Length: 281
Image (cartoon, rainbow, N blue to C red; front, side):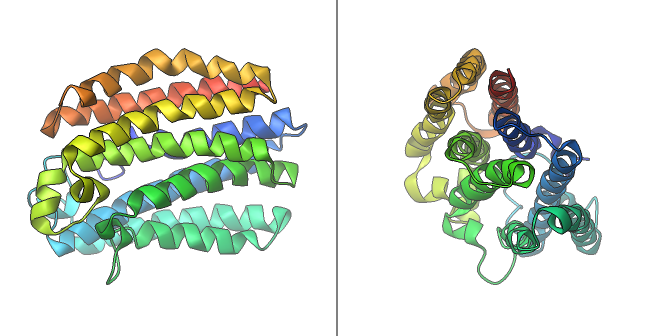
């Protein structure tokens, strides 16, 4: 359970919730496909978390980490056990994804394969993109645009601009989770040679990036509201977004950012639920 990092799981559930609401607003919900999409999304994220734990652990980049306990680095589980857990999680996502592809289009297998590859090579492989500062970009694409628009597509049978706008909002919250995570570990990552975006631009700029990622989703929600006015209900999540944003701007650092990570996840979940209800109604 620790290795799965449950505090971050709203990042995978929210885009599916929003994508299903987009499908409802577009005229059709296919519940079993939505459920399969949720299984795919959560299993992919859990698999990515295990893969990250494994790869960072065997590389030794978790030695100076100040965040939550890591399985490999702490010795609680062997590298082979954590790698196996990652493969099992990716396998669960693959099975659910195949069921979706059988009904919604076999080309979706390529999308699923890209998602698994993105999860593994974040910190795995000879040149992990997470070590080069591209983690935020991939999170935005896969935990935002792909997950949200993909969920809507498998139910509606078409891609829509609204799904893209909603996906961008969801993706920015997911990026905020990664940004605050990397801000917390910025000093240790710099020592270990992990050149995350936070290491590259510095802590001060990273704090501004975080606030931007927490604020911009509401602008995208306003864009969705031009099509479906109920999307404005998403502003109900503003107070929950302001709380962690203020802490980050005030200079909160180190282990204190673990609490901010949880608050960011709750703000994302509240935003996703409010936006989904607004679209549904």
